[in-house]
Image (cartoon, rainbow over the protein chains, first blue to last red):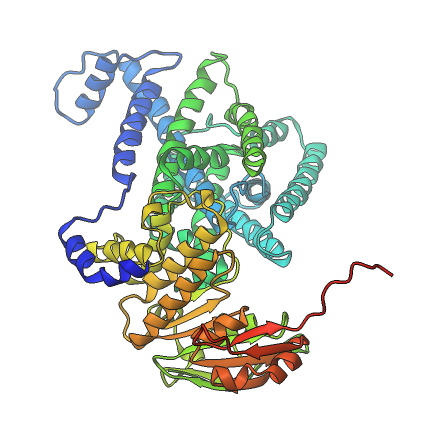
Length: 368
Length: 265
């Protein structure tokens, strides 16, 4: 170093000529994941009880857009595509993106790779609030029309998710630097409470209500229609649009809260922003699709391994691959036991749990 | 540059610091010394605005520290904390670039990247630029953090650098290089305030020394006036002897410890 000091001026000159590169995989990643997502969406739209070929799909879309005057495809396929298939695929994309982004940002906020909306009880909090409103709505708010009803449930689920996250965050702060143990214990407590409430409702419920409670617990995109897409859309869009702006602050949080503050991060406002944005997606998706676990945990992990831990890459990548994973999982869930449907939450948990155990295993092994 | 007037800090009725006053001018290298729990880190936290003083005041560039916004402070001074655990696999370059975050919006400019390279070279780890931070040794990690703090204040006129035990885990060569670097910065009109454990290093490099004992200022002033045999014994409870070897330009502090007895009672 001492010799370098002497040569400082020369090196400055030499360096002024050479171009400085900062290796960033964001652009490349967006292209790769974007095209995979497009392929998945087309695949999902074509697959199902009534199979649509890609050329038929093209003609259906082209006819709707007025590019061709004649469709030359059976009317039935067109209706299935526009009324059943497309809203469902859109919903899967939106919810997947919302869950992925929520997972990535919550892990950043808690600077802990185990923070996941399902594990720490955020999803449960959201579904608890949503179920309450549904029960009240049936009894007292019958006057709300369909869309307003869907919006209000999304909003209330979001409030529930936000409150739970805030509670977990404050509790984990009490025992020091966001310790894993506290986080998971909070999750256990909240999940147990929600489990008790669900048990109570199961005890009181009639047959129809039992079915909808099961729906909340297992998660399903079966109820997809354009109303639910419209109800989720704005929440997820806001989250996707604004979250990347917080990526620098989330990166700094890696240095620890006090060092982040010395680099100009206002912890209080960052905390509020992340919690609100992250829980918007989770809340809205819980409102229309129930509990879909492990997407928010597994997806950011894969992106981090493939493209590095920089939150800018991580957040965009998690949104894209969350959408990919959920679109594929939903296609699988509605074809694997056709004509019946397997709730998607069962699938994501079945695939997610081994992966989660693998992460824990890897973490332990790395410490050796 | 930074002026501390009768500053005190207490938590739940326990006084961690009381009645601390001193004033740091640009171009000065201050060493804070004292026994464990004397309040050194607390003082750094007061100076970095992580904690607010509970009595007295801290003025930075003639303005109350509490009136600064965090973003504004981030462009005027850098802080290097004692513990830096990072488990996520960021590269060295990404970590040092974090020091430039207060200065750009979405993408780093060529200038920012050039500063990162320069700071990495300054602390002698230019070759580790692409390595993953968690795979580095403790001393190397500490040097990455130092480079990060350096990058933050690199372009500022008369910036302030607050270092809490900057040389933890570094080998002997890099400890001395860190102090050389700090001295070099003070020549560029920077002010450096560092918590230092090795009294010999404080004696050798510091322009001023602040000695703390139980949250009070025990002695303050020029190193040779503060680091006396008597003061060190009072603050650390260890008898020392200060000798002036012929070969070195600096006096050396040697602890007077009785030889270890092998006859256990």
